Length: 88
Image: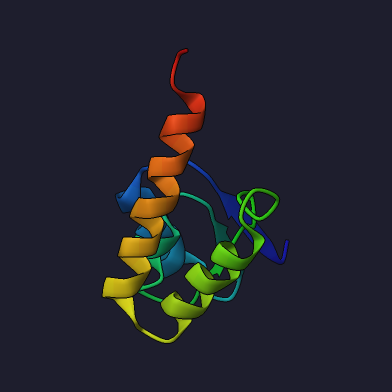
């Protein structure tokens, strides 16, 4: 095992995973903005087909520690997702 893929919203479990097996590479989807502030992790590019440039920017902002800009971008991406998934 060399990596994990984490989806969902359980921050406590994700942080525990980082602490217990730091030698693995951890890929996050929804939790990336929160978890990247606590240790090394990667962004699973689930949103990349919809927003390739924004997904790359989100990752770069997290890696550079630009958390305020990262959370704004994450919020904007989530708002688009909600509009797309809203009932018609």
